[in-house]
Image 1 (tube, rainbow, N blue to C red):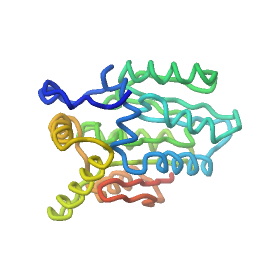
Image 2 (image 1 turned 90 degrees about the vertical axis):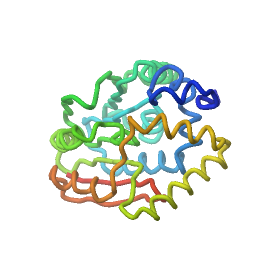
Image 3 (image 1 turned 60 degrees about the horizontal axis):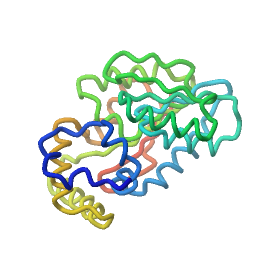
Image 4 (image 1 turned 180 degrees about the vertical axis):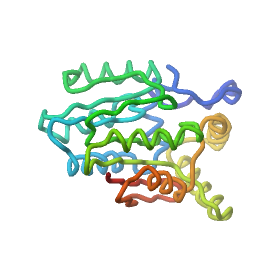
Amino acid sequence: MRDELYKSTKKILNNFNFNEDTANVFNDMLKRSVPHYYEIQNMICYITKHFLQKNSNIYDLGCSTGNTLLNILKELKTPKFMLIGIDNSEPMLKKAKKRLRKLRSLNKCKLLKRNLNTQIDFQNACIIISSLTLQFILPTNRKKLISQIYNGLNKNGAFILIEKIVFENKKINRTYTELYYNFKIRKGYSKLEILRKKRALEKVLFPYRYEENVKLLKEAGFRVINEFLRWYNFCGILAIK
């Protein structure tokens, strides 16, 4: 289904949330809202392949409708790992489960309904992925979550972090935001839809500066931190334990 959630004026009154309406259009929203979405998915899969450890777990935080889980399953032929998708949205998890069942892949995956703002116990993890998820975690809880991720990773395990970021320099921040909105217009969103969604996200999405994300990773103990992706106000970071 095509994402037309913010063509209606009533949506501007509500904070953005991952309800059934959002789940129904989420894949279209991703394709039209995340720059180079398919290439980012490829990069996640290729990096995962390089850090895979046999008989270990791969976690996808904020797995939504299961795109990353499905792409990893297609890329990695060996069955000697378990994929674990975590999300707080029941509608998203239902979509993911339906897609995994259709491909007969449920035996290779676990889907867990969890709130990442609370205590999460990661076990025997070789890779943990957070693709555009950390920015929705309350800032007061992010340091704790990053520490939990670090503690749950095996030695030489990898944390793949994709995030929207902001900049200290106001002119750069305005410029990159404008360029991002131009991207969304090219993908078919109207200026009014963009404005309405921006207002809906203001109280639930809190992007950090790149340096703030790196600081969290360093404080948690990651020994290698490398930026592998940058598109204006989007970045990808690979952190190795």
